[in-house]
Image 1 (tube, one colour):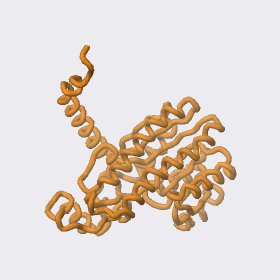
Image 2: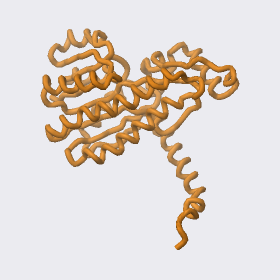
Image 3: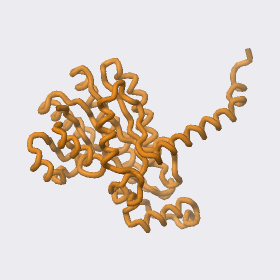
Image 4: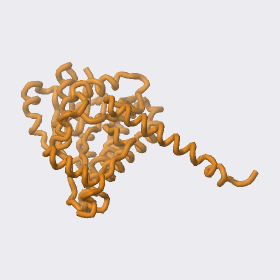
Length: 279
């Protein structure tokens, strides 16, 4: 039996991972804004499930939850940093509040969760830290600037700290799903529209989002059950895979983005070399 600490555990991929872990006999420390949404699982699994309501964008509260979880549960084998949300709108349409919330939840909270968990993982001789990102950590879409900024940011942070904590037996994996059939679209924050963007790609995507009535992922190729299983299985892979694309759309999107960036880099090689000191 292993013990997992899961944020965003009450819905979507986080909920599916939590359920699968409980079914196979593992213990889960589940963190959600509203832990009462896990009452059905608590009733069914009893002491296997440890729950707490917390706003993980409150750094002090997040640190307290991590401290309490390790104190009460002892060893925690896997930290699954999964909570997140999406925001849509052209950069100038976004309000200050939307920008701050997106960075706080998708970037600052995972950074602070890692900082709070690493001392405990070091003390126990190792563990695994799994961070949910997205294909959007490699590609971009007009209208998703702050979402992409937060995901590209968390990818860079996790890649850097992977090298810092590897000597202590701590493995880092960044999960990069494509579109998955969850309720993610219903939780998306959409900025007020600016008429200047109505006939642009941003305006066209806004129309699609509004027409979907919060059900953007109804036809998504990603199976949440299979995605959750792959995430759980990744914790047993050694060494920890730094990145794990999940979904054919994620794989193809990331491959295309990497090829495109490499081609662009090669096209600017002469300029790059021209800026060195003359030999």
